[in-house]
Each structure stands twice: as C-alpha cells, then as structure tokens.
View (cartoon, one colour):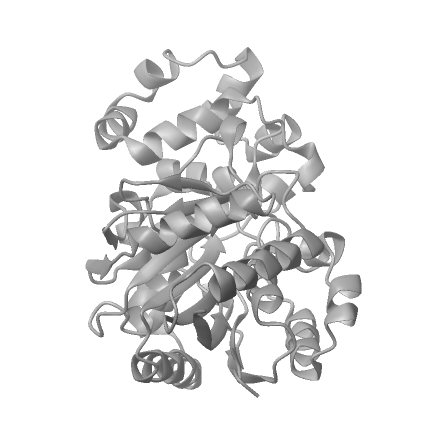
Amino acid sequence: MADIVLSVAASHAPGLAGLYSGAPEDTKAEVDKMYGTMGAEIAAADLDVLILVGNDHLANSRVLEYPDFLVGMAAEHTGPYEWFKPWLNCRDYTLEGRPEVAEALISGMARRGVQFFGRRENLRYDDNLSIPTVLCDLDTNDVPVVPVLMNCNVPPIPDQRQCYAVGEALGDIIQNDLPNGMRVGLFGSGGLSHEPGGKRYFFIDQEFDHWFMDMLEEGDHDKLLNEATPERMEESGAGGTAELFAWFVVLGAIGNQPCSRLGYTAYDNFKCGVGAVRWQMGS
Amino acid sequence: MAFEQVDKTLVTHDLVQDLKWDADLRTQFEADQTSVLDRYALKPEERTAIETGDFRKLYEMGLHPYLGGQLARLIYGNAAGPDATRAVNRLIASLTGEERPDDRTTT
C-alpha cells in the first residue's frame, strides 16, 4: 500500500513566468508565496513520485482523435515544448519520470473500467507542467513526476463527476497497486477562471474563483459535485475554467481532507485567476 | 462560444496543430502563407477567413477557440509581451467588432 502524503492544486498560466517581471509587486508577492510554499512542501515530502494532473491544451493530439487522459510514460520529461518557449520565457528543464508508475496507472485504470492512454516518448509540455516545475522547483529538487494530461477542451469533456470517479480509481490504485511504502504526491494543475481564445480573453471572474475555493475549504464534496458543473465553469470562462476538473481528480483520490487556500491573485495580463490550495493529508 | 459549436472536422484545426508542431512549416507560413494554405483542403470561406484574420467567421464555422487563440499568435506574434498582446487584441477585435489598441491588457 502506497501513501498519498501530499496533495495540492494550483493554477497554471504562461504569464506566471512570461509576464511575471511586469506584474505589480503585490501580485508577484502572492505568486511567490503560493508556489514557494508548495515547492517547499513538495521538497520536504520526500516523494517517490508526484502525479500531476493537468489540461493537455490540445498540445499532443489532434481534435479528431483526442484522449480524455494521456499519461507521460517517459523516463525523463523535458520541456517546455519548443513552440511554447516564447510564451513562457522560462528555463528549460528535465524531470525524472517513473515509467513503472505510469504503467501501473494505465493498467490499473483499465482493470477499473477507465480508459487511460499513454505515450512512452516525451510529451509536449506547455504551462500545464512547466509552470509547476519552474515555480515550485520540481526539477532542481529532483522530484520524480508522472504527468497525466487530460481533456478539458474537446467536447464532450469529462465533467466533475467523471473526474471525481477517475480520482477515486486513482486513489484505489495508489492504495492497492503501487508498492508498499511508496510516498505519492498529487498535484492538480489548472484554472481558475479564464477564457483563452474567447471574447473575454482578459476577463477574470474573481467572484467565481473565491466561490470555488470557498467550497473547497468548506469540504462539502456533494455541494461541489452538484454546483461546479461544466455550465458554471463555462459562465466564468469558456474553454478555460473547466480545467479545474483536474482538481476533482485529486479530490476523488484523497476523499474529504481539510483544505486551505495558499493564496489568490487576479492580474488582468495573466489572463487567468491564479490560486492555490493544499489539502492536509492523514487527518 | 460554447463547446457545442466546435466542429471537430474543421480542417483549420489540423493546420494550427501542424504549425505548432512543425517549425519548418511555420517558417514557410511566415514567408509564404499562400503556399502553406494550398496544402490543406480548406473550404473557400474558411481560407478567406484565415487570410483576412476574420476569427468571428472561423468561430461561426466551428473553430475551437483555444486553437483560435493559437492561430492568432501564429499570425500576429507568439512571444510573451507585446507580440502576444497584439495577437490577443486583434483576436478580440475580430470577435467583437470593436476596435482595440494592440497594447491593451485589460478587458
């Protein structure tokens, strides 16, 4: 039986690296606090693997053949992918992969009736993995990572209940399929409100963002599952906010654990509400 | 634009994906857009919309907004800062019909 010893979730946006230097000082301080806290806690957790779930952003598959979940099975993950480098303006990185954990996820999901796809070669990573990596220093702290890229964009997308159920299967795999004593961390990467490519590209729905994080802190999963619907996500940012469904995978895996927010900031030019939460594991 | 309006079969989706994934094709697109567009089975109005930067038309035809944002960056500039901001503003201007300065960074 492996143990989930750390669980966090946070926004990613290219601007968090690429536009950071031009952001207001209070915004930069909030970003530093959120990602610095997560980075320190991840480093201190002595993880055998960090499973990071985040939106694929149409980076790895064509619209006509789009998987809902795609696991990075490589022994090393490198990024950012070349075309995204000008957006991100961050350092190149190499992360240690855990192919055997990736295989266990894919085969374990299949036994539980969930379709996970995988690729053994390096995937194309944009801000989904790059922002957590460089802002939380996953690369420099040698944190082994298995990325699980998901479909938050190509309809029909897996909704909050489907993602929660996938998370429950993930928790079961960690508990029953991964080796005894393995220390596992979970990172939900994505959100909060944003509308990439839409009329409201610069819009950040702060009311929604606080409402969503308030519900996480309240810990009422039934309420979350009833109210954080795809329709509600679309209202607060079409085609972007729904990447919060990655957080539901984490929620399903860990069950009801105390949650606290690490911070929040809304800077128009990031084009995304930026927040982070941490769940207290083992309580 | 709602998800339901996305036409998964729109050929522009493949064009944008190929341009993202193939640096040589991107260089050709920057030098001679026509020769690249000739290789794709675009509908006439779809091609015209790309050539004129008419994102509203492309979205009406079912272009995925996420790839629309990326197409704007492929046409108007990809780097963080002024390039990307110009691309975003021209995209929004096309979608809304309102004029926007290239350097605006608010709604």
